[in-house]
Length: 210
Length: 210
Image (cartoon, chains in turn red, orange):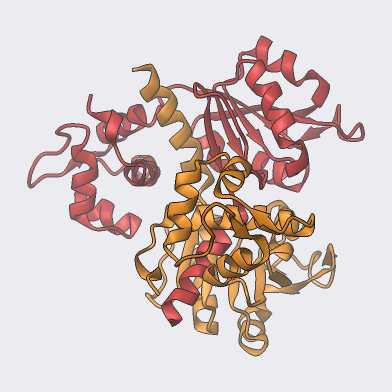
């Protein structure tokens, strides 16, 4: 496969296309054109065709794409033919918001547990997800073979928790703590930095006034 | 200024450097080398020098950068010499998490109000921020000259709320709703898509196994 050099922007769009395809499939649509996909995601038909062409020939010229087949191919590319075992560290407002976020479950991310050091939260449930003591984190990740951890705790404890996750054999981390996190090369790490996102907006606002 | 063609990756790093410089300045550090900045953000000294060179000559070879001056320059570039008037739409878990997120205030984002359609929340406060009825959104943005809105509501209502914000004269929107949002060209829009972030991780996990 030619997947190794795909730009991240393409992966981002594939993820968005795939949710549209999910929606179309649920609503009984069987064939879709690149133009219809483009309209559904506010993009261009040429971009859609280019993105899908990275992965071979899916469509039939003049007819379009089979919604179900295309979605299966795109999900396979995105690693979504498999259900992922996920935990969240941090049962604060952000952790709770993430538990209630339906998008994760719909896409095959099964959030199985949430960890916190607040003894008032340990033993409770958030939605239908149990809260465990942070001291059980390492053992839980090891024995339950958790693959992905979402880190939603303050910056000052983030590296410490990430080190525990790395030692436990986690494969990937989505980090929301607003700080620089180091992991060994074999771990996939992605940080969602809210301040950075705001500052890209203000940079653009100021640049456009210059 | 040469700022118009700066890659977004550079802006992201500048935002991270600036938070490190804030920290150094608060702790009385006056001079910093590109190597020290690089260590603080888990980057390379050459990258730091290259990023800062977009904006002219800041440092003195063999001495380093004046922390206070450099931070002022970087903040100016990022549009942070100005305090921004911000509101949040959506007083759910995510909106509440964002209210309590200290990083925004520290960087000059003043969250002045939060809007929701839940009458049990309207009239209350989250932290020290008042919750208003969503019906007051348009008038509030206009009269208080709000510049940036953070949209933290379910996907099905997101475009409707964004249209109201656009009509009210908002300048920029940070969107957390997991859907495609359209705005006129003169509005800055940035979407933080949690599912996409997870799927970049799984894509990378699967690619690395191939």
